[in-house]
Length: 535
Image (cartoon, rainbow, N blue to C red):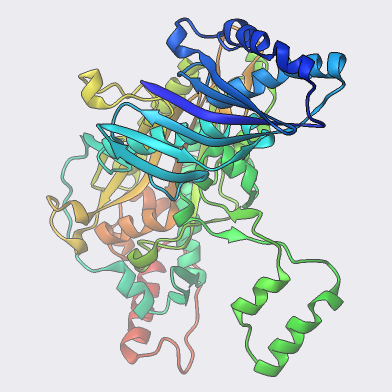
């Protein structure tokens, strides 16, 4: 059970006359009986003006309310009833409403932080949680701040009950054991031989030979998996406005992993004279000084890669003859802040991937996902000959959105509901197969249900039908790492499908100082010699 309390203070254009005061009690009775009960099936769900008073040009209503007609809604309804009456009969306007001393009373103890927006204090007593709110003006009440605050509290509670995990993991399929003869760590070899060079934490420059292998792997995946299923290439923007991330949920769900971007304060170079002078005198670019010359962040760098797909169709009505839509994008990098987990090309800040997106009626989306699963298994098992496994994961964002149910609730696994399947590959250099840390997620595939079509208002042209979406992403660097970790650098040990489809890479270079060691130079020549076996 939930109850609300608060003082609605109506600031009038002038002090009301005695005639109004004489009628006020009757007016309040009418508001209580007719206005504040609408939408409530039971009286305890409605709202009520319990007391009232006049202070100069301020009319004060003390409101108590239940779950259906909440205190801010009651305050606004009362204003809408009063405004024409005051205006026509007494020539008095209502300048503003202030909701003061508002509180929310929950009949259970839950975790609520005092740092939440608009929360003044939180009190726990007699098994109840009482949330004291800051003052709210009419604009904030109209924005349904109290409702949004309750949604946030519910979100945090459900996440806590979810077990503190981002997702739940259940193994659903795995390959046969493959004969693995290679045990080296490709990360160390690639760096030692100079095929990659660290640009910044989590960022690498890929020299022509390794860039070639990455592109060949992408090409092979597109030719063997996507084109046979009718997917076509699109190019998505990689700088995404915050409002798009608000609709996808990323800016409120994963801000700790995102890179944000700002525009300069102006296009006038003269406005940057102080910055230029500082850089010239100090011979460095102090970030703290740069803050004065950029606007607040209004973008984030590509995080999930699929966001522009939903934006493109946002607000559109889709004719069923145009469904399903099947696109993919691999036009540029994605960015994620991985903090302390950065290592080689295994965990990166800047990485490349193929993002596969599709949209259709629910049965179409499920069918496409299943077709992709068949092709993925073929690609991983028959083309790359990897040792892999799949796991069904129910991401919290889907569970919270009501798009998926916990596996414990449904009794048995149903992968045709919204959720995600992760694809993992074994990295022999990290440890034995039974060590979960020896497996690396190299891709995933998701059915979103209506999560994105609802938030972006993508509609079917027939009223009785809905549209679902799906997406799938593969990190190219991780695919290559998994392949090299199991097969090594010698094409003689590669599966035939890869060896015959990969073309010979271009040569890189050796300088006096790079690679840094004689051992590295020799390793470079050795690997390039092996790769030259490709046609």
